[in-house]
Image 1: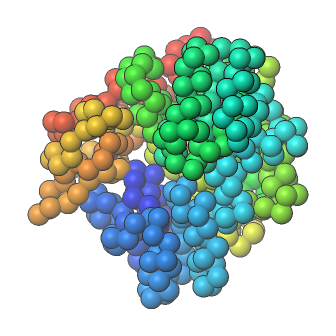
Image 2: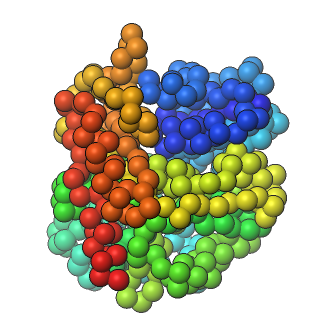
Length: 422
Ligand code: AMP
Ligand code: GLY
């Protein structure tokens, strides 16, 4: 079978490595992939947002199955376009991907179906938004409605900053049209948990839970990033909380999307906050999270491709979805300066004995790898305990030569502390 994976980051590398375990797959294309992914798939230089070219390529190459991983092409409707050509896909169609594509939509969905989330109001007029802020408790959270490359959330510590955030989104359009509508919501507190799930609209199977580390620097300091590392499973996500989330959040969301005529098929990501009033939804993503995928998929013991096929066919209840009892830790190496400006082109030397590296941003030249992008590598290791997984991940990370790189040295520290206190 010929498979096409759309995207080119660490998440896509993790998906491709897992798909390769299936003996029925003879060829995997990555669009565009990257210099590191090129070791595991044939990279085709087509941007993941260039929908017409992707469809032409898939038709020309007689692709049997497509995995669409990033948010942009999903929200833009790539799955609909490929399915029109008779190509089976893993990923939601445009109608369902709106659960991530519009925060106003997802908030209204939760309100309508009684799914726990932060209190909020939606504004399309700046003046109304500014006036409303005078009545809000501080801190307050301002979110651009549409996709904003992971940067569309501002937590304002003063009313003045909140107003500045609204102005920058609605007047200065720092996120383009994504900010012409904003959601202003209550600030929630508690441990965060990411839960990815497989769903075909009939059943929903949660994957192992994980914890992201979004800030750039140790001790959760510095700017928000796409994610500087992950661990799985998340110790805060106990069996009791999991049962509650399934009953109060996961299944109600699947059913709500069906009732809205927007059946979701693919990976539905729940960004949760465990507040003192119970688990609440911070955000939905219509796709695998990154770097969560870089710890979740290495712990998946079942065949990823078979699960994806079942999701596409609507027979997920027949699929085997089993996870290891181990822990995993992923340390992200990023370019110095990220998430601000940084330099590309630094050589990456990965020794042979470090095998679990997912490449997020690199070029290949004459057999050598060079950094390209903010997040460059994800180094994942497994262990029977979280402590062991973290220790091994840092040993492997230390063996990599990336002179212009940096990484957090406390990935997993909060989780280890939670385990000790439990
Ligand atoms: P997002 O870009 O949607 O993943 O949001 C980035 C981060 O902002 C989340 O991981 C949370 O840490 C934080 N966040 C978003 N919404 C809220 C909220 N209502 N209360 C507190 N923190 C939030
Ligand atoms: N790590 C969060 C995300 O993928 O959006």
